[in-house]
Amino acid sequence: MKQDPTYIRYQRQTILPGWGDVAQHKLLSASVLVIGAGGLGCPVLQYLAAAGVGCIGIADGDLVSLTNLHRQVLFGMEDIGKPKASTAALKLKALNPNIGYKVFDEDITSENAINMMRGFHLVVDGSDNFATRYLVNDACVLLQIPLVFGAISQFEGQVTVFNVPCGEEGHCIQYRDMFPQPPAAGEVLNCAEAGVIGVLPGIIGSLMANEAIKLLSGVGKSLSGSLLTYHALTNQMNTWQLHKRSDSDALVPKTVSDFQNTNYQWLCGIRENVLELDKEQVEEKINKESIQLIDVRGLQEYPELPHWDHIRIPMEDIFSGVELPRSDAFIFVCQSGKRSLQVATWYLEKYEGPTKAFSLKGGIASLI
Image (cartoon, rainbow, N blue to C red; front, side, top):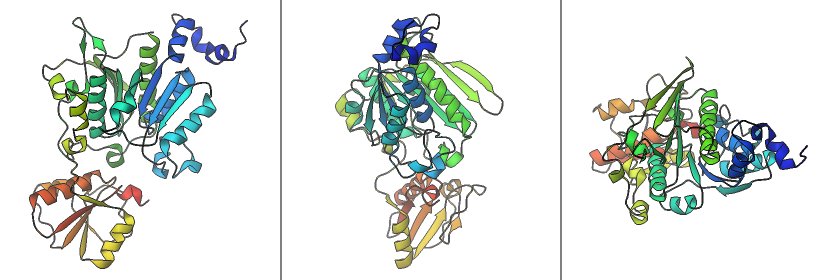
């Protein structure tokens, strides 16, 4: 009977039919970069580490907050305020100290993505915004790295695999085959704005980890060419066939230089000419200037904006031309800071003049 600690650790999956030492060795020799250590990233990281993936990269520039803990169960109260990526690595080392970890306590950007991804056999995208999704997809296409993708919102989630040859002609389906261009500003809400049931990222993240393990081990059939969807309230799960678009590859930057010069934030409706203000800067402006605060969330969204006097005008109404009150400056606020930034950007582009527009960085979530 084998007593090797490595064999004992992975014994329950090594004895599986069709698995054996060969598949396990492939995992131990593999490397995966996980983008985002949040709701999706946490279960992906935990199961990849437990399964024995030899090297796991973790990229996330965010800090752990109290609002994370209902779904990001890798973290605890003692981790609030700490960097997600390096904190996740410490937790994973306690789970499996026999594999390698590479930590990036920074957000992935067009400037650092290529160097960050190089050397990894697979990328898993657990991000929650369109700018990052398009950026990660395009980098993977350029570097020819397979990509496991997942997304969640409210009670629904989806999983697929991109950039792996599939079908009779060996086409590589990519993210732009599903969504050629980013949606209009404010058209789709993220989890901070729309909400998400806590167990959903655990379910979808586990499915993403399963796809990664299948790809790396060579065991089983991946979701390449198919999109799996899941609804938590009905337990309904469907698989939809994806098709290659004739123009999708042309939408990806052709060279590394072109990619690094692409502003994905701008493509997704986030303009850099808008100044974001943190809580302290907002309070300073309120005390010194004539400021009108406007909450741009829907009328039924909670919690209420604390601390400051304000009015609520939903973003859709503002875009439809509802007249705003007269003011020397506006500070727009929403749940996470994304919709308010879009409104401030839109306002500055539409109305040229002395009036200023700002957005509360991090939104109401940063005040709680």
